[in-house]
Image 1 (cartoon, one colour):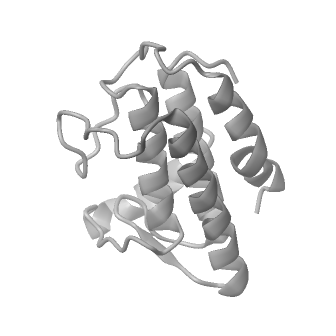
Image 2 (spheres, rainbow, N blue to C red):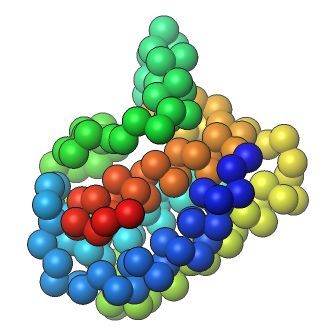
Image 3 (cartoon, rainbow, N blue to C red):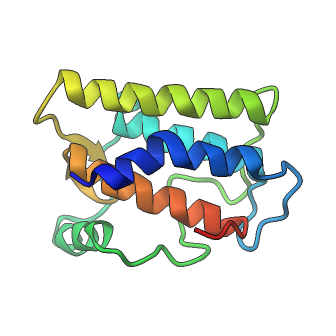
Length: 154
Protein backbone atom coordinates (compact mmCIF):
# COMPACT_ATOMS: atom_id res chain seq x y z
CA UNK A 1 0.00 0.00 0.00
CA UNK A 2 1.16 3.51 -0.77
CA UNK A 3 1.85 5.19 2.58
CA UNK A 4 2.26 8.57 0.88
CA UNK A 5 -1.28 8.45 -0.47
CA UNK A 6 -2.63 7.31 2.90
CA UNK A 7 -0.84 10.24 4.59
CA UNK A 8 -2.34 12.58 2.01
CA UNK A 9 -5.85 11.29 2.79
CA UNK A 10 -5.44 11.41 6.56
CA UNK A 11 -3.55 14.70 6.88
CA UNK A 12 -2.60 16.81 3.87
CA UNK A 13 -6.02 16.64 2.26
CA UNK A 14 -7.68 18.34 5.23
CA UNK A 15 -5.19 21.17 5.19
CA UNK A 16 -6.06 21.84 1.54
CA UNK A 17 -9.81 21.62 2.18
CA UNK A 18 -9.61 23.90 5.24
CA UNK A 19 -7.98 26.59 3.10
CA UNK A 20 -10.57 26.25 0.32
CA UNK A 21 -13.07 29.12 0.63
CA UNK A 22 -16.65 27.91 0.88
CA UNK A 23 -17.76 30.22 -1.92
CA UNK A 24 -15.19 28.91 -4.45
CA UNK A 25 -16.94 28.29 -7.76
CA UNK A 26 -16.32 24.89 -9.32
CA UNK A 27 -14.19 24.66 -12.46
CA UNK A 28 -16.48 21.80 -13.51
CA UNK A 29 -19.47 20.02 -12.04
CA UNK A 30 -22.45 21.30 -10.08
CA UNK A 31 -21.48 20.71 -6.44
CA UNK A 32 -20.46 23.49 -4.13
CA UNK A 33 -17.52 23.05 -1.72
CA UNK A 34 -19.58 21.64 1.14
CA UNK A 35 -21.51 19.27 -1.14
CA UNK A 36 -18.17 18.00 -2.48
CA UNK A 37 -16.86 17.35 1.04
CA UNK A 38 -20.06 15.52 1.97
CA UNK A 39 -19.86 13.53 -1.29
CA UNK A 40 -16.38 12.38 -0.28
CA UNK A 41 -17.68 11.31 3.15
CA UNK A 42 -20.33 9.26 1.34
CA UNK A 43 -17.72 7.51 -0.80
CA UNK A 44 -15.55 6.78 2.23
CA UNK A 45 -18.53 5.23 4.03
CA UNK A 46 -18.58 2.73 1.17
CA UNK A 47 -14.87 2.09 1.65
CA UNK A 48 -15.10 1.68 5.43
CA UNK A 49 -17.94 -0.81 5.13
CA UNK A 50 -20.72 1.36 6.61
CA UNK A 51 -22.64 1.75 3.32
CA UNK A 52 -22.83 -1.50 1.39
CA UNK A 53 -23.28 -1.43 -2.38
CA UNK A 54 -23.58 -3.98 -5.12
CA UNK A 55 -21.68 -3.81 -8.37
CA UNK A 56 -23.15 -1.71 -11.16
CA UNK A 57 -20.29 -2.43 -13.57
CA UNK A 58 -20.82 -5.45 -15.83
CA UNK A 59 -18.47 -8.34 -15.06
CA UNK A 60 -16.76 -8.07 -18.47
CA UNK A 61 -15.74 -4.43 -17.71
CA UNK A 62 -14.43 -4.98 -14.17
CA UNK A 63 -10.82 -5.73 -15.12
CA UNK A 64 -10.56 -2.53 -17.19
CA UNK A 65 -12.21 -0.52 -14.41
CA UNK A 66 -9.85 -1.90 -11.77
CA UNK A 67 -6.87 -1.23 -14.04
CA UNK A 68 -8.02 2.37 -14.33
CA UNK A 69 -8.48 2.91 -10.59
CA UNK A 70 -5.03 1.43 -9.92
CA UNK A 71 -3.40 3.65 -12.57
CA UNK A 72 -2.21 7.22 -12.15
CA UNK A 73 -4.67 8.43 -14.82
CA UNK A 74 -7.00 11.15 -13.57
CA UNK A 75 -10.77 11.01 -13.63
CA UNK A 76 -11.99 13.24 -16.45
CA UNK A 77 -13.87 16.37 -15.43
CA UNK A 78 -17.61 15.69 -15.25
CA UNK A 79 -17.11 11.91 -15.06
CA UNK A 80 -20.67 10.58 -14.73
CA UNK A 81 -21.65 8.76 -11.53
CA UNK A 82 -24.70 6.54 -11.92
CA UNK A 83 -25.30 6.67 -8.16
CA UNK A 84 -25.75 10.44 -8.08
CA UNK A 85 -28.72 12.51 -9.13
CA UNK A 86 -28.33 15.13 -11.84
CA UNK A 87 -28.82 17.85 -9.21
CA UNK A 88 -26.49 17.62 -6.18
CA UNK A 89 -28.15 16.73 -2.89
CA UNK A 90 -28.68 19.52 -0.38
CA UNK A 91 -26.01 19.77 2.32
CA UNK A 92 -26.57 17.76 5.49
CA UNK A 93 -24.10 19.45 7.84
CA UNK A 94 -24.50 22.91 9.35
CA UNK A 95 -21.39 24.17 7.60
CA UNK A 96 -18.04 23.36 6.04
CA UNK A 97 -16.31 22.78 9.39
CA UNK A 98 -18.91 20.18 10.40
CA UNK A 99 -18.62 18.53 6.99
CA UNK A 100 -14.83 18.38 7.38
CA UNK A 101 -15.18 16.87 10.86
CA UNK A 102 -17.49 14.19 9.42
CA UNK A 103 -15.04 13.48 6.60
CA UNK A 104 -12.15 13.20 9.05
CA UNK A 105 -14.15 10.75 11.19
CA UNK A 106 -15.05 8.62 8.14
CA UNK A 107 -11.41 8.44 7.05
CA UNK A 108 -10.32 7.48 10.57
CA UNK A 109 -13.02 4.78 10.59
CA UNK A 110 -11.76 3.59 7.20
CA UNK A 111 -8.24 3.09 8.55
CA UNK A 112 -9.54 1.40 11.74
CA UNK A 113 -11.86 -0.88 9.73
CA UNK A 114 -9.02 -2.31 7.66
CA UNK A 115 -6.59 -2.47 10.59
CA UNK A 116 -9.14 -4.47 12.58
CA UNK A 117 -10.03 -6.66 9.58
CA UNK A 118 -6.87 -7.33 7.56
CA UNK A 119 -7.56 -8.90 4.19
CA UNK A 120 -11.12 -7.54 4.07
CA UNK A 121 -12.57 -6.61 0.71
CA UNK A 122 -15.22 -3.92 0.42
CA UNK A 123 -17.27 -3.59 -2.76
CA UNK A 124 -16.92 -0.44 -4.79
CA UNK A 125 -19.97 -0.28 -7.08
CA UNK A 126 -17.82 0.71 -10.08
CA UNK A 127 -14.43 -0.91 -9.48
CA UNK A 128 -15.32 -4.18 -7.77
CA UNK A 129 -14.08 -5.80 -4.57
CA UNK A 130 -11.15 -3.75 -3.27
CA UNK A 131 -8.65 -4.38 -0.51
CA UNK A 132 -7.17 -1.68 1.72
CA UNK A 133 -4.39 -0.65 -0.65
CA UNK A 134 -6.73 -0.54 -3.63
CA UNK A 135 -9.18 1.61 -1.67
CA UNK A 136 -6.38 3.99 -0.65
CA UNK A 137 -5.43 4.33 -4.31
CA UNK A 138 -9.03 4.92 -5.40
CA UNK A 139 -9.87 7.35 -2.60
CA UNK A 140 -6.70 9.31 -3.30
CA UNK A 141 -7.61 9.54 -6.99
CA UNK A 142 -11.15 10.62 -6.08
CA UNK A 143 -9.87 13.26 -3.62
CA UNK A 144 -7.48 14.72 -6.20
CA UNK A 145 -10.29 14.81 -8.78
CA UNK A 146 -12.46 16.89 -6.48
CA UNK A 147 -9.62 19.22 -5.50
CA UNK A 148 -9.13 19.88 -9.22
CA UNK A 149 -12.88 20.49 -9.45
CA UNK A 150 -12.28 23.61 -7.37
CA UNK A 151 -8.97 24.62 -8.96
CA UNK A 152 -6.76 23.48 -6.09
CA UNK A 153 -3.26 22.82 -7.41
CA UNK A 154 -1.69 19.61 -6.14
